[in-house]
Image (tube, rainbow, N blue to C red; front, side):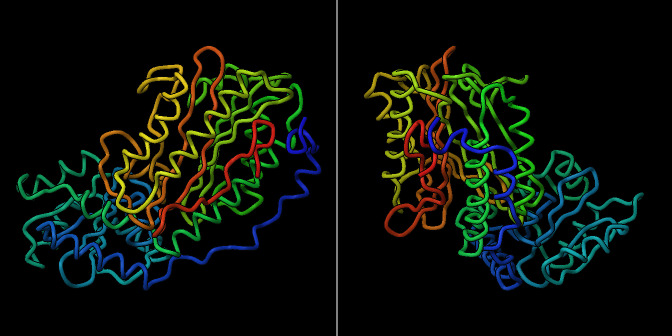
Length: 400
């Protein structure tokens, strides 16, 4: 084993877990106000009179309300002027008051009432004729609105939602940095407790408990642990695997801090690597580095994907999504959602801008044998990109 793999027992690893002391501050009321102002500016640019944001990550972004969608409508209605409206069940008013980031005009509805009538009424009061609907809304929301609004009056709010959320503020970057730092520490400790025969289920439980001990919102937001041939499946296969000498280990996990995500993958070898494992691992690291080097403001997202694929194709992998090679996009946006626009993929011509955040993970799959994914996140800066976490150094030294 290396000095970073299999060198800790569980007690030693647990002793390194304590509540995180370098905590990023919460998003403040002024920033929430700036988000509403930006949304209104984008609404004007796109000819939209009103914006309806339903429960989910966008409602958290604009109003600080960390609720998931259900069959009951909870939504923020933003019009050109005036305080936003909050449409919600009457019995939930107190719970919403506890998390709402700014004053809102409440429109409360009882269980037997139609909340979509309240949306239409509020629009009429403000003279709004067209409504931009959050793209994350369910079809049931669209159906409910159509009972009161002409279908032609309902537009796609993607230009507004993505136009606000794609570029992260310094406060958002700080929260993401904390989440990434915490997950990297968890990854280090997980590699440290590796031993022959340890089950993937035991590592998953340790990783979740470690995230909780450090103070993540709710343990691991997700966790994939795979050994050997199972690493060839990008999101794993079911069942428990037990670690053996010479296995590649792929751990992909993350957490959230005040809703903002981390998402880090490390692939390393338990024991001595084969020549093939080392060769593919080095190609993976070169592809990840090429993608990072291609980043600068104004570059289309798809060019970053292309930079990674050129490295792999020059080595005889691919082309395109053909295996052995890279079966998926090079990266995804990240923030309050673990996958959010824009994407580092062919066809996404979105120009990179400072504050955009992405994963960099051009995984290599050798079907039936193994896969290697190295995933770190970066944010775009004025002269290129900046890592949230330092990339892996070597197949037997996963942490720089």
